[in-house]
Length: 271
Image 1 (spheres, one colour):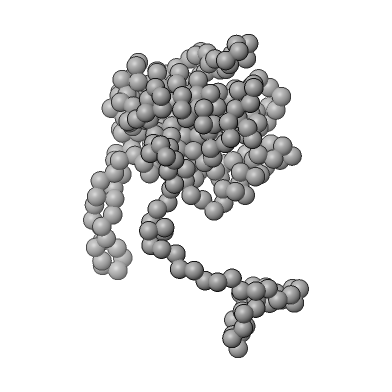
Image 2 (cartoon, one colour; image 1 turned 135 degrees about the vertical axis):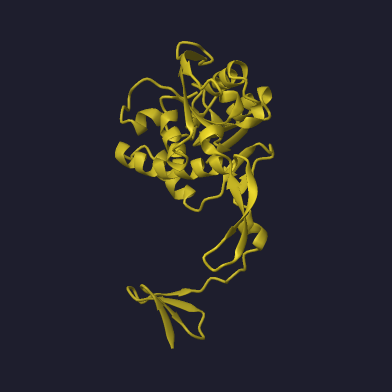
């Protein structure tokens, strides 16, 4: 008596798994129960409680694809978009919600959670231009959220690669909203701090109402942000080794904006 699943056979009363295609027998792996606490804990936290790295079994594969210098711009956008959606869902899920009870189709009461009124309570802030990719991922989850834009570029002529602010446009009521600040790369933290100063000082947004989302972060950038604004939450898919002498993240993935918009070889923007 056997049980088949596609090209794999699971013979009864044996410790082998046999492939239909090759006929090769492989040892069975032991079945280990997954503790309920593990299933209920979707994210891991850095020693700093305000740094959140989502758990996702696809991340090692997806990050390998977007880090690979041989990956085409088309494929980079494909695999990066999957990462962006996961990070967007994680960030949106951190916006406060309230308990509620609903009825399921089986006429059962379910104790769940209801999100705030996203149209009036959420603002997605993009640090141009690469931040637009993350911003659109968040808007695909919450299309009615307000949008703010901040244009910051890294000054390559300065030794510290300091950020330069060119433009900002934020809603007049941004201080009453939770803000998801989007920039795929957190390197020195310069751009993030510049954008945060606009939101906190000009927009009067409480720092603990801001969630910064990035694809890759360097420890130096995390320290820079939390030295100034420890209440700001950081959601990132990866924390890399650090910065090289040119202040770029290593191992990194290159310039996210250039690879996403197929302008490889253009002006660098990582900050």
